[in-house]
Image (cartoon, rainbow, N blue to C red; front, side, top):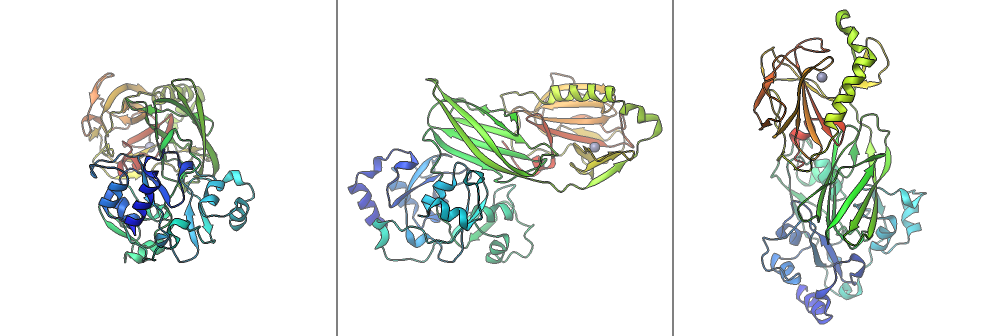
Length: 474
Ligand SMILES: [Zn+2]
């Protein structure tokens, strides 16, 4: 059957198709290669062999494909799930109109089926119920039906069962059952998961042709956490953008055709759907705007009351606190276009975590309008403090609230801070490496006892540092 399709495609001279998604003829879809995918996995997903997929796309070396590369794939009705309801997870660049077109529905049908009143509010990661049968392209309508191919998903570092399930339009329970997983929180990198039901190839029909890939992880953003956007383009462009009323920092590679945007979601962000606005300017000055709706969910970080000792309460003087806060924001809110961090970060101390990031705080009975902006580690005075990742020391000083403080610039707008130390062993301008001893744990500044407070900032926002220990943003 594949060879019939190939013959059909060759006969129709379709192999020289432009990459623009809107030019895709019936019978063919385009798969945009995602990070972590290889040709084998993609072929398996569509019930093809690697050879077939490589030949169809003129790929000489199946081991060499690029993230964002567009692959021609024959649409095969046999691969569509037969069980209802069919779910579709909204991908970056999709609109309700393009999704409706994908399934041969009208926008009104799709909106009504999902109780959507404003068609512009669809957001990335939203799960839509597609009850109508997908359109079967006439070119393959007569093809003999085959059982749906199983997909094998290899768990990547930092992935959760929830995220994997969502990516395939499944529930966690469906995925756990299919793999006999009793505890959905225990999965490991490299684990092979059977994806029981293949959803439609996910196309972003509404992305402009200049965009060759737009990857947003995770699909749903969480208050206090970090999100990563990876954009690739067909030609060199300059990219700027904004999210949540703040401009975003854009890291470009040497070709100016691949871009990474790291976004810290500020604590106290109201849950809701917010547009990510990107602006692509090419060498001729032509500007292509992109707007992608992203959902921000509320975190569940809990709360605590802090009672300060009387002799140190004076440090809450607003003028002392705000001047120091301004200093920290200036240093940790800047942007170095070079990336020094690689892979997940290390821990800043060989000690137990005593207080997690994010707890909403009240000081001495006041309102819960503060939050714990870092992660605390236990430690006797004198225990070593370790650099969590490579970078340049940009602050090493005694501060009133934060005590003996060190800040490291890891590039791409990512900084770590180490507060309340007894000794600081590094100086501004030093380049440090992961695990290097940069100081010792102490009780300097506004504290109730000796501990290390570790802070991580992204794009000017203090976020949960532990997400960076378990996930790679490099
Ligand atoms: Zn702390």
